[in-house]
Amino acid sequence: MHEMALCEGIVEIVEAEARKGAFSKVKTVWLEIGALSHVAPEALRFCFEAVTAHTIARGAALEIIEQKGSAWCLGCSRSVEISRRYDACSECGSHQLQVTGGEDMRVKELEVE
Image (tube, helix red, strand yellow):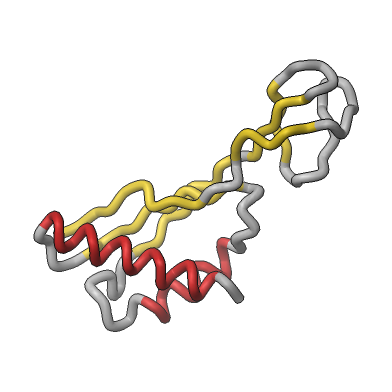
């Protein structure tokens, strides 16, 4: 379950921001997670609670903003939405797609005290 390691990384980001911003408590963490990122949101929620238990993010809400996947079709030269890496182009049916979005996970925002 790589979500545990991802949550540890989130805590590192939160603690680094706390040092910069001089805050002592995190109320909410907003994450953007791409549809093609291979991150299971429910597993991430479970791990987040465990990993943050003894940190400044203890008890913080985790808000997940899911980002759709997108790709450039080499067949019809259009940008299309995809939900899985090997989807066909919704415009022309080609499988020659170059992923252009939806692979990332990032901390978008923190609500702090």
